[in-house]
Image 1 (cartoon, rainbow, N blue to C red):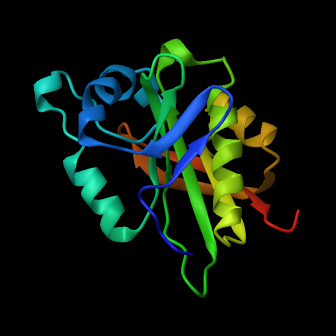
Image 2: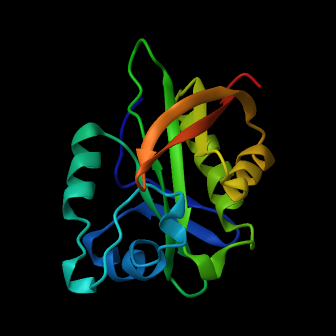
Amino acid sequence: MRFDPSAVIKTKRLTLRYMKKEDVHDIFININNDKEVLKFFIDKYVEKEKDMTLDKTIEYCLKAERYLFAIELNDTHEVIGMILQCSTPDKIFNNSEVGFAIGKKHWNKGYVTEAFKAMINFLFSLGIHKVIASHLVGNDASKKVIEKCGLIYEGRRKEEIYYHDRYFDVDYYYILSSQ
């Protein structure tokens, strides 16, 4: 897979492009300052925008050669969320896990499904063999998105993640490039 941080994915309503430091306001408003969004998306709550930064996350993903895309509305150019590679594929494990989050005011409009389908096609076009997605058990919205995108349930890992002072089981799904 050849990593290209200048890659842009266009859909009918969205543009997926590499996250920029200047996206910090929209990410703060839509994700990191909303406890309801952070109920299942594993990131830290930030109370004041002046305490918010994307610098380390962007730097880490660039160094690890992982795509960290802002989900931007084509009509307003607002960054409403993010979709990212949670793992870097290599020669042995030619797979990649994808994660996503979107601001609450944009829920139930099909944006994440649209972005995730585009991300799957993008990763397959780069030669990825298997795309993986997971959700904390209880996150029915993410489960619906994953299933709408054609991923197949693979299994549950018990008490996989410690978040909000408790352990969560995690359900895993996959789709193969040959499907």
